[in-house]
Length: 354
Image 1 (cartoon, helix red, strand yellow):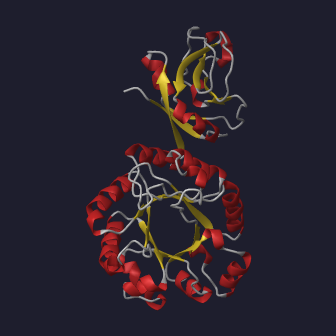
Image 2 (cartoon, rainbow, N blue to C red):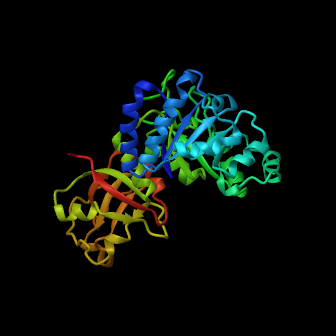
Image 3 (cartoon, rainbow, N blue to C red):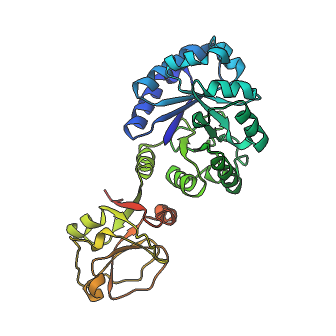
């Protein structure tokens, strides 16, 4: 699942609606907001959260709200009657800041509960089990870290998520956006420090493929439409890669730009397209048989016999081969994405030249 973060402010209501519309159109289905950010005015909480709740209902998105007993009080609620929030469009609460296990367990029978993923210990989880927490309604959400140098290390995230999965809990983490940054620091809102200035798509792929993260939310106020579309594609299982063509043959480029699947027995040096050797394979005469730098998109020519027509993407620098035509190059910014096109993974090449 993928989602976005909303920061409540009267002057942002219209922009917020536009951002949610774009997100929903691209398959994002989760919203996070917080009711205890120190810069915010608690007096405006109720009206603004109700507006956001209506928007969440309109776009059929889950709405998870970070609360404390104090912020619930501003809404005229307690943990005893939180189910009334469901009518507002709020689907769950992120519960932190020393809330008793009994309260958390009780709320889990009424709505979804997100716990602080970084601070769940064995003893705390056992306490919650004793209190009959409804495990299927529980998720573990990592924080984002506004101040540079305070984000988590990848090794900690991996280890903690492994433990949480053993407990049967799904996990969530944040990636930075590449649109408007949230103040006062405006330094990005990632969970992992290494993601602070990283492209959102690359950060997304690292979380879901390497770190055992089940749900990814953009922490910042917004992201570019390109990033939203790229993450949406990756969440559907197709990794988008931009490339520059080195030939002009449209029928060849048409084949290059279809959805491809890397073989289940992945090669060490190249990504091999399963589809390129099926029915409508392209058979080429030798041309442009240059050295194959990392990111080269190649098609085996007629000299390769039964391999003729196979499309590959080089994942390392390889020498020239008279049997292999180089037809394009993955753009440099997308080269770090190649390791994520693993065994059986799908990818699609998009021309970077307008």
